Length: 172
Image 1 (tube, rainbow, N blue to C red):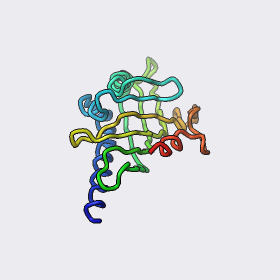
Image 2: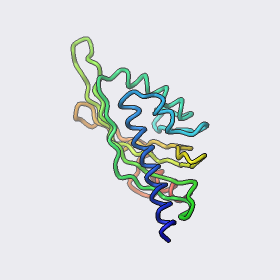
Image 3: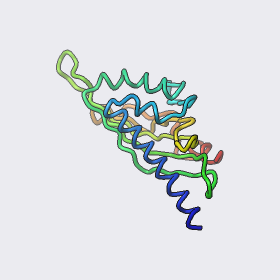
Image 4: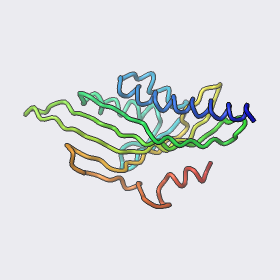
């Protein structure tokens, strides 16, 4: 019983560490750290025509967006992880809420934009060679603010069982 609980805790902590390294990799502009979040062949879908492709390709794509910012910060919270096997977990699913805050480089008039997005990362994980990483991510935009004013709500975000999170957890 204790070994089973220990294996569960270790797997969940390892997954949380990868989630936190994702935020750190982006915020500190550490591309190698950001790449390591995904297994080779890992994929990502960022709804609302933001991005669809490989995890590594997403890092390359988002790098250009972050280079156009003076500051950015990813705050991860409400991490729910379900393991496939309680004794010896090798795959898992997770939902992570994140608040992403970005400040743009000033335009020609010196104006900066403050953008805030409240998102969720719906991830499928596996442990390969004792390393947990993402096999597939679905990004869901719940809402977005520009200079404090609401500007967008994602089309995938639902406040009912049509939300993509229900499909993710029903697969696990």
